[in-house]
Image (cartoon, rainbow, N blue to C red):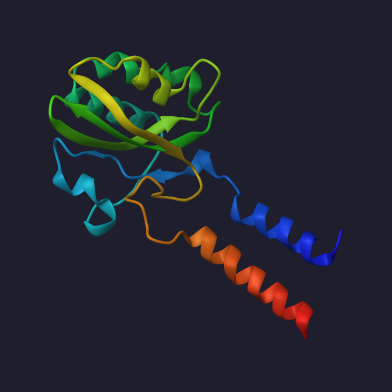
Length: 167
């Protein structure tokens, strides 16, 4: 392997380090707060994930549709601290209205995948449109950015490495 490949592999791993256990996420529901559609453009601040925020995410989901209480109900006491927490962004359609839910959730496990639970609960009146989990940086469940910081960092590193070898 060449030096460039080693540097590339190291940069890749540095850029993609996970830190899910201490993550801060946006926590809101567009049903209660229009700022939830674009928290990156509002005064919303990410909150530290923990047992309390897991319960808040469940409550906000139930505020969108009562059936979501059971879907978001997790055995918090036995899982928090054992499994990492991740940020969650969900878009659901209830009737003809789209709602955004952002919050904290347990990392995917063999018996728990919130996105699959939402997909399996689809009905004629309420259905999951989008669901994603992330733990790569605080506030990663915000609105999509036009250019990811991780991609920018990888691009800069690759340019520096290329310059280093062409000199």
